[in-house]
Image (cartoon, rainbow, N blue to C red):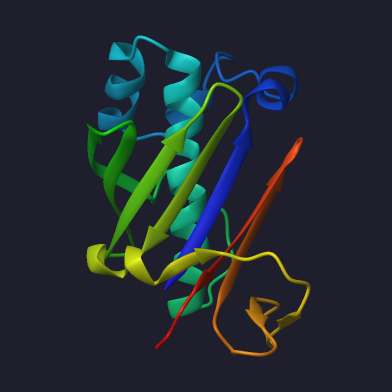
Amino acid sequence: MIGNDVVDLATAKIESNWKRKGFLSKQFTTYEQILIQKASNQDEMVWMLWSLKESTYKAYQRINYNRGFYPIKIEIQSLELSDNEYFATTSLFNKTFYGKTHVESEMIHSIVLLSDSDFKKVTNYTTNTILKDKNSLPFCSITKNPLSISHHGAFKKIVQFHLK
């Protein structure tokens, strides 16, 4: 299904110290830690990977509702930069997802889906016709399409996955 996450980089810098002892090993796999160590902007890489993990978690909830805290179980399997966007393959509980991340100077925004071809079915959502299902997952009350809502600091992103 769909998941999205936004990170306000200024807020993350104030509220989170990813350099504290043990943080990286509790949140990121060895491969992900190597990506962070090799990055020219380590802050940006940490929050981009975090955003992909959070988006993957949200997408997984639509398939198999299973609340929990799974950052180390959500694995970034590949990460490539193309045309100022990062493309990733992630997994959680043996389910593969495809992610796209846009990085700006103040914000990082990731969207994760079950199929790489489904990105054409995603649009930004701006109206207030939002309801929640029995698991508190948001959907559009008019179209019944799934929504993913994320907010952090000064930023809020709502995306809609068009089923048809």
